[in-house]
Image (cartoon, rainbow, N blue to C red):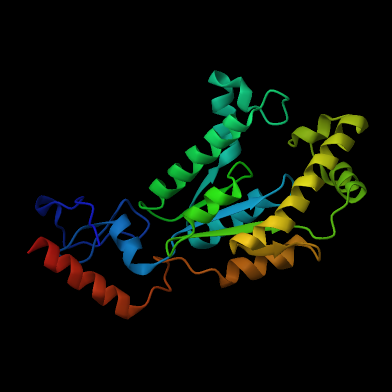
Length: 244
């Protein structure tokens, strides 16, 4: 296994730092979080799904429970729109090339950031085939769907639960109906194709709260407190060999 040479003899410290910090230290050792993650398994989660499926809500729950950094793909898309208007969601000029570019960018970013520590990324801009290539011992991909979602149900839910903080709050009925149709169509796409790639499916047809709570409680991150003592011993021995 390749080791990123981020440690330095002069950095050695006898005071351990928290596992979520940029440098994870054991007594008399100093090691990058990337190497730690390589030893201890999954440290990044990618949440996919259609709009209004609960991706952001689930990402926040995971981040709070497992001390992760959150990456919202929509935030990056908003930045790209300034210099690349063609990536705007829902615009006719949004080309396949733009969609491919966004997906490739997000795949590279997630793969790179997963080497530095716990990450939960959420969005719908990552193509399923790119997400499938990301899946590994270190990166887990899940898809949030609602197998009983209909246009009328979604429309009613948005109208009932939206607040002024939601951009859909200001949509007229005609625009919201069109948007609901697009979301339901994308939800059906995820339902049909996600299982082919081996992704875990989180179906919220019986309510988000229970589905999300069950998932979060059973999720285990590599350098969370649940990491095993034996793996820590292997890690410490590895570090000693590298710095001697």
